[in-house]
Amino acid sequence: MKVDEKKGLKVAIPTFGCQMNEYDTQVAAGLLAHQGYTLVEDESEADIVLMNTCSVREHAEDRVFSRLGMLGKAKRGNPDLIVGLMGCMVEEHREKLFKRFPQLDLMIGTRNIKELPALIEEVASSRQQVARIKQDGISIEYTDLIQRDSKFHAWLPIMTGCNKVCTFCIVPITRGAEVSMPAREVYREASRLVGEGVKWITLLGQNVNSYYGAYYGGVTDSATLRQPGSHSNASSEFPELLDMLCQIEGLERISFTTSHPSDATEELFQVIAKNPKISRRFHLPLQSGSDKILKRMKRLHRYEDYKQKINRLRELVSDISITTDIIVGFSGEAEEDYEATRRAIEEIRYDGAYIFKYSVRAGTPAAKLPDDVPQEMKEKRHQDLLALQKEISMGKNRSWLGRTVQVFVEGQSARNADDLLGRTLQEKKVVFKGPCDLIGTTQSVTLHDVKNETFLGRLS
Ligand code: SAH
Ligand code: F3S
Image (cartoon, rainbow, N blue to C red; front, side, top):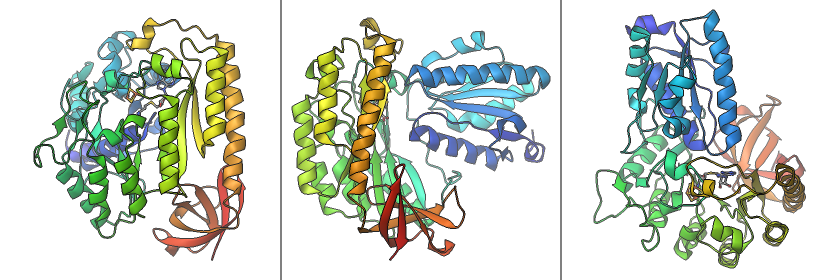
C-alpha cells in the first residue's frame, strides 16, 4: 500500500494495563500515523483494531477475550476488518491464540513494535494470520514520531523486565529479564523531550529502581542486560540517573514508577530529599503485612524492614505521599495474615492503595500452590480494605485543606471546560478556575475542599 491509500484507513488501539502499555500505544500510534493511517478513539469506526493487552490479573485478560468475541462478530459483517493484539498477552500466549480466535489477524510482541507497519501490510496483502514475537532484546523504542496525549507530560521507559521472582506475578514471564537503557540514551531522550516543551517526565520500569544502565563498566551504548538472579547483591544506579536528570534545565518535575522495596535504598531517599524537582509521591508495593505470606510470595522483604524504610523516607521528606499495592486472598492467607495486612495499612496510613484480589496466573510459581482462599472471602477482605483505605485517604487529604501548594497545570478539566486541572507535588489532582494560558505552568493554589480524591482550589 502507498501512503495515500493508507490515509483512508482508520486504526484504533484500545489499551489495557500499565503505563508502559500506554507508552507503547503512543509509539505504535506515532509509527502508524507517520505511514499515513488515521488514529481513531472509537473502535467501531476503525478498519484496524489493535488491542494492547495486560496479563497481570485474570480480569484483565477476560476483558480482552470478550472484546475479541465482539470483534469476531463485527468481522462477519466487515471481512476486511483487521484485528491484532500487542502487549503482555502476546508474550504469554503467543501463536496459540490464533487457533482459539480465528478472527485474530496479527500478533506483535513487545520487542517488535517497530515492525508493526510492515506487519499490517503483510496481513492486508496475504490475509494470513501473522505474528512477530522476538524472544530477546529490549522493548523500549525512543522515537520522535511518538504521539503523546499531553504537550507537557511524557512517559519515559528506562528499563523493562524483572529479575525478581514474586511467586504470584507473571511479569518476569511476559516481560523477561531486566534490561536497562544506557544512561546517556535516557539523558538524550529526556533532553529531546524538554526541547519539545515537555516539563514533566515520568520514568517507567517494571522494577524502575533496579535500573542498571548508568555506569556499567563505563558508559555503554547498548542496553544493559542484567543476568537473572543478579538483583540481590548489585546496587542500583537509579539514584545517580535521577540526580543526572534533575540537572536538565527546563525539566520541572520527575516522577517514577514502580519501585521495589528491596531496591529502595537510603541513597535513593537522599536523592529525593535534595532534589525538589522529584515528585513527592512514592509508590512502594507492600502486597501483604504478614511475614508468612510475604515469604510465600518471595517478596524479599519483611514487614518491619519495609516499615523502617517508610519511616526513614518520611523523616527525610516530610511532605512525601506514599501509595502501595496490596493483594488479598493469596494462597495460604489465614485470618491472622489478613489482619496483619489490615494493621499494616492502619499503621502506615498510606495516601492511597491499589487493592487486588489474588488470581492465579498460569506458569507462575504460585500456580503450584493451592488457591485456597474462597472467592467470597477474597471479596469480603477486598471490600473491607477498600473501605478502610478510603477513610485513611480522606483523612490524609483533609489535612491538606487550607494550604497553598505548587500545582502543575495539566489542562482543562474533563468535567467542565471552564476549570483547569493540575497536580500537586504529591501528584494529587486539583481543579480550579483560571485562564487556559496557564496550562503547562506551575501555579500557587490554595486547597479549600476535597471530593472523591480531587481537591478544589483557588489561584492565590
Ligand atoms: N512492578 C510491577 C508490578 C506489576 S503488577 C509494575 O508495576 O510494573 C501490579 C500489581 O498487580 C502488583 O504490585 C500486585 O499488587 C498486583 N498483582 C500482580 N500479580 C497479581 C495476581 N496474580 N493477582 C492479583 N494481583 C496481582
Ligand atoms: Fe512482578 Fe515482583 Fe517483579 S510484582 S514485576 S515479579 S518485583
